[in-house]
Length: 384
Image (cartoon, helix red, strand yellow):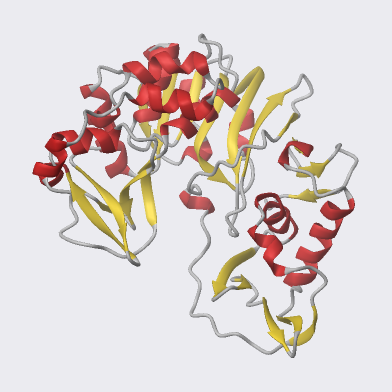
């Protein structure tokens, strides 16, 4: 967009108006914080925009101030780092996977609303990112009640500058958020841990650093990119449990939980049989979540329209194709990944194919399970 075109369009709408419309009454008590925190302070002077198969930097100076404000005040995720390269440092389009972003403000508010915060809790935020969600927390709870930890030192330094510009002064920590931050927990522990990154299972430190009756709010995800938002409450026995919200929300996986490097994919013929489920089911939000629970070590890829499951550790793979009018699956290696997926999805279908609100989770010191319907229903153990 040229500066001349930007000047010719109408002034940008307020972000609080956009978010309020999107949430339709959910998290309304967070809207004053959205109104008070200028998101444009947290985008720096450049972001990435998808450009074919790569990412092109979009610079504030190039698009003009009005266009930049419209971008900042849109309910849109803006990628700020790709494979460790910040948008401001990029000399041109880059390839790779996003490693930091400014998440949709409506998703930030939906997550904070799910956490059930009332205004006086001591909170550990895992994943400072640009600092925007941190500033929203500070406005609602007060700086002294917010501790935020960021894994990437460069992202953390940028967030610290953004928060200072916004007048927010939380406790900021650089480190592995999966270890929590014990020094900030105090004698009583945090009232809540809220993660703006996804995890494959609950880090034990989060439980250990919670106050009695505290809560964990996070997105459970994995290498298939199925995801579910959940709030777990800690009971007097030290067990955390809760149900998924049903929101179609996801965050980037915490870097220590990201998949290991995968060699180039070469499909093997393996053992071939007809599939018992339609691979198109993996396009369904909840079915994909179940598939991931059933085969937690598998990465999901696509070759054309066909899914491919690959296990990096064992080399196991499964892939489907239409052969002579019949949908078949090829499985090779020590793990029968498609068998695992079929078994999990069959249990879900037998239960009536419910949405994620019918799923819950129980976490103890020794085991973590996701269950369907009730704790004694079909269940899946999460990876350690």
